[in-house]
Structures are given as structure tokens and as C-alpha cells.
Amino acid sequence: MRRALSAISFVILVAALGLIWAHRFEHDAGGGSVWRLSDLRGGVPAVAGVEWLGTPEKLSLRLRVDDRNPRVAIRLAIPGISAVEGLHLRFRMSARGLIPGKEPWESGRFMIEWHRPDGGPEVELDPVAGIKLDQKGDSVALIALPESGPAIPALRLEHLGRAGDFQLSDLEITAVHERALWKTGRWVLALGWLVWIAALIRMWPGISRGRALGAAMICLLMGIHFVIPGPWKVQRAISGDFQLGELAGPSVPAEAPPSVTAKTAVDIPSGTIAATGKIPVQGSFALRLKYAIKQARPLLHALLLLGPTLGLAFLVGRKHALMLALALALLIESAQFAFGYGFGWDDVWDLLNDGIGIALALWIHRRFMASRSGGTRPPMIMGGQ
Image (cartoon, rainbow, N blue to C red; front, side, top):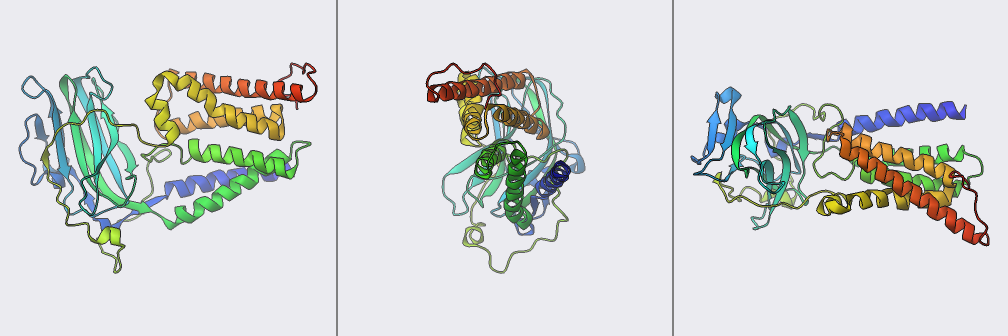
């Protein structure tokens, strides 16, 4: 009966997680309506290397570099937009003969500029997509969020490659904010997962409530930081797109918060701009460290699971810690695939390094327990308690 209840409650928790994640955001009527490339074209001066293609109903924007224009960068202001908590973007990018430069960031780039509502000079650059070579991209849907919002967004496109061109098409922009369902429901759901994991661990013999709760807390924190929501700054739906609901007509709340009321005074002109160079990786500290020190990526992946596995080993023993740690490693890589970041040989390498971290944690625990028992050589069974 306990196993059946555990299985049923697991299905309910997964379904609830999928539901509130898909409905995490909704349209922000106060931020405006829906903008497309045809809405952004007005007021944009002619820029060398930038060309508008197609009809107003099917408009696309092409950036091309040549000997006269070795780099092309353009800003597109969003007319009438106010300070918003986030943007839902749907678009398609394709490249033709886009030869990248020596640096990884010297390619075709699509970014969001987040401007302060008070007109301050600080501008946050938020990369949302990049492209190179002869890629024909699929339609992409995502949510871009400023580090500290609300903020006023503008689009920035840069071609920093050595040759070729890229196009932006099928663009749709809507202002969004988080639903109350997510703001409250995530805490209820986190508590539900904590209880479920602790109850699962309690089904194993010889584990007290306190140790089961401690191990469940480690698993939950790892899940929050590396599975859902995960370490990424740009938010993606799982299979498909976020359910934003119907878009109501624009309306301004009677009592808007101070950070939103003084937003329209900021002037963000469209046109040519100076191209930027390398942009720091954004997201959680672990994600930034992973990409900032690429040479240390294997070590970081090993450390990612070493600490939690060691903690689990002390709480529930090596055998059960191994099971939980392997589950976490698989969930972390599966979430990356589910969010549309793909899965390749580098991810297989990451899993191998996760395994090294897990094995090292279990070895440290075994040696520590051997020293506690007076130096007796422990058995060579990985799952020993």
C-alpha cells in the first residue's frame, strides 16, 4: 500500500509541477500588446548592412557584413512599451555562410537591452540567441527576464562574424509577469516534494525521520537549483510554450508601483550602435563559473555531485546515497534536454564526471568511517552502510 501511494503521489506531483511551470507567466496588459517586426520598423533609420525583407505581414530583418561593413549592430526600440517584469519572445533565426570570428561570441547575436526606468546609464545586456554557419533555425519561444526589474526593453542585433548574413523573422513580443499561481504554488509544491522524498527514503530500513528529512532537503535543493527552475536566466517551457492566457486590452493599474509609473520618460532611439564584445555568462553562480572556466568544467561537474553525495552518504549510507546521487545526475542532464538545450557528447562527458564526483564522495565516506572504527580496513562494497 505504501508503494502504491508513493507511486500515485509521484504522478500527482509531476503533473502539478508541469501545470504550474507551464502557467508560470501570463500576459501583462499594462505593458502593452503584441509587437512584431512591422511595429518596430517605423522610425528606424537606414543602417549599412541591415535590410528589411518581405511584406509587412511577413517581415524579416537581415544583417550582412562585407569589406565596407566589417561589423553590424542595430538597436530596435519597442514603441510604447513600459517597464515590464519580462518579455515573451517568439522568433526564428537563420544564417547563410556566416563565418564566425576567432572568439566564440563573434557570430550573429540577438539580445535584449534592459534600460532602467529612471533613465540611469546602466544597461543590462541579455543574450537570448546566437547563430553561425548555414543554420536554419526552428521557431524559438522563451521568456527573458531582467536581473532587477521592472525594466524597459529594447532589441539589439549584432553580426560580428567575418562573412555571410543572418535573418530574424516571425518575431512576436509580449510583456509578461509571473502568475500568483507560481508565486504561491511553488512553495506548496516544494513542500510536497520534500515530504514525498522523505517518505520514500523512510521506506528504506534503518533510516530515522530526521536523517530522511535531511537527505530529502539535499535532494530538493539540488532539484531547485539544477533541474527546475534550474540555473538558467532565460526561461523556457518544457515541450512547447508557456500558457500565457488570453491577452486583454492594454490597461494601466490605478495604483502602479513607483518603479513602473515613471517609465515613459526614457528615450531609447532605434538605429546603429557600437557593437559589444564578450558578454559575461548570465544565470546562477554555478552556471557562470562553469562557462567562465571551461578548462575546469570536468572538475566543476565532479564537485557538483561530490558534496551532496557525501552529505547523503552520512545521512542514509553509501548504498542509498549512490541511488539518490545517480538519480540527481540523470535529472540534471534530462532537464537540460527538456528545456531545449540539446544533448551531445559533452553532456555524456558531464555525466562521466558526475560519476567521478559520486564515486569520490563514496570513497571519502568509506575512508572516514574506517578511521572512525579504529583503522580497520572496510569492505570493498560500495553500498556499505
